[in-house]
Length: 404
Image (cartoon, rainbow, N blue to C red; front, side, top):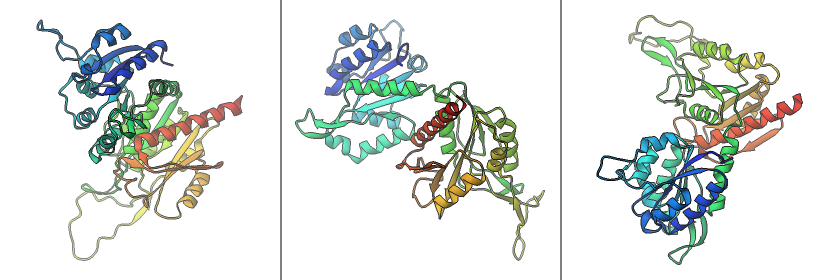
């Protein structure tokens, strides 16, 4: 899985830096091309000569190679790599990465990296457990970085506890597993709806909800990374999507329904993550409604049921995934929606799980199908997206086996 892959290996000032030689050896044995970027402190633990001999490439450490105008381009490294691995990663580097402190070549390269980033922390147990370190880790997780958890064991301080960098072979296996799964949606066309819809009352007011679109955008990015051709139909949000994603921006349920039904016939799957308004004003005022004595009465009518429309149109082989955000009787309501709208599975979350729904970077979901349900722990939305897409891939495999 690593043959031909280009890996930027970042090395920081930790005693575990000696293990980077073993990481390089394992990567090269598996056919990867490795470029080392090392911090000044890292060179105190292992020499660039050793690293260059193993990678057959000059080691990058400083911004400038000499006084003749030559320099190392962090931008080029960010475009060159298929993945960046920082192992070992110290507490100070975690802090700089989380805060965007680009005062060395490694952090600058990280900030320019277009490829997935894997981080293997290494430090003493008290440093690892410190709230500031854990806050930096959570910040970096929320940016979509992949963490390779340290192990508990004997540390350089003489103490024993969590903070010991994972072993080189296990680190390389994480990369291998990532690339093995990274193209499991190659050739598939996936539609994803995301964000809220705004249903106009007048030119300045609307009926809407608190959806930020973060979960739907995380799903779109995960599908793109796995090789899918992604069409993201988004309500009004303040999020950016990668260039490889075809994005259709809409405002109302009417517009989202039109875009979803138009694109569904050519899709292999649709994931309906948007928080679509169930009702809209029956009459939209052409002018701003002024404050008057008494009450303003709005008469509402139902919007399009996008999930039902796609469920009715679904053909053999297509997969339809729904979302259910509930406040009570969660599983009962989600199972009813699963059946009524001809979904293959539904992702349930609840407002009762504090800090996991609207505007949060975290989610806690249950995936429900006719075969049963699986509860997942609270995770970042990027990690939840990976779990959901793993399930989508399993559904594709199941349908393929039925055809055969």
